[in-house]
Length: 563
Image (cartoon, rainbow, N blue to C red; front, side, top):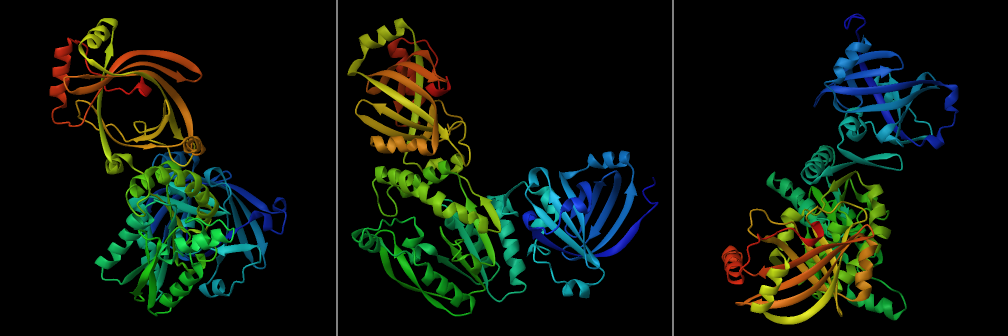
């Protein structure tokens, strides 16, 4: 069939609604249905070209415009041409079953999506005039109208890199920079019709909702000259004295529970700002754990509210644009440990680690993660060890040498023994869920006689003569060590018999090493492991020690866990 043989053009006037298929009042088996597959070959801001297979018919449709009213032109093509067009496909193929449901003098087209969009159902209704579309009274089984929500345009569904389905809603997921750009776009869209726009930014602890997402959005609009006020939920914290008062009454309240925050006062203040009235916002001190005064906040064009619980049911309806900043449990733990050790309340590192494992993570799962269902978009701002690990408090420079019996005997004769030997067992871990750890990151718990040490090491730095990486160590108790397995699973164990020696001012170990993985133990051999504090003279020191000890073997940068 010629592509120009049956061209049809019209103005499309269409409204869209989400649907819970369990609420549809008729048996779908009694109405017409079609199996639809479609993809896009051209996508511009106000123009698209789509190829569709509906049962055994093939069409190409072009549309100009976005939203409810668009120009549409459609024509039939053959199967072969459809196959050729697929080679130019942008994004994925959308598959759905379409049901035609009579409704008065209208037809409801109920689209039940399949594949990766399974769980999404959208009703479309076309009208012959804008007036009749405005007079349309949706049936009770229709859900939220999404006509103007670009998320539910089929072109958007086809090109989303990632999304989550929640209660029949599509929530697009963006990486950090794209997520900020999309947030800005949505805010600008609201500003076109609203005097004051409330933006809610929620997410777990250390997700970057404040320091990255909220701050970047604020920066964009300030640079454009648009007034924006930022309100932190943290400032409405009730303080340590409140926690102690509740504890005296037998109620356990922690810093990561909604009850710790005065959500009523926050809600009242945000309503005032949206109404154009200034507020006196409390200021919370993380050093004292109490409020430290008041701060005047002006009623700006944009009111940006950020915090753990800004998308709870109590606050969600305040938001005109709602953003959830996501991070996996591994990233949340490591980023918060790096941030909180020696910062904020000045807690001991052991307390920070225990509190995160015992309280922060369970509270996140219980109170924060469920509010993701209330967001408009999700921004994946996961921990990036290649950029962030350098904030850890220590750098490790390490190299090892494989030893044969002659090497070991020569070293023992020339070096001074510092310890007669200890047995170390290292447990290595990977995250159970919520984002993978990078291959060259390391999470380890070491049992060393009466000591238990939690260690994090960032990626190995490139172009170094030794194995150089940022790290931190925290000495922990048995309970904390056991809690590690709540968010991580064990991948292997390294068993070492380690002796410490000193030679020419340099301390090193001789390790007899075995690796246990998959239930099988394998002997790796004996090694000399050398650590230095300065990278500037590392190569010179290695060469000097090798020469003085009469060693001919080459240094190894591979960790025991990777052997």
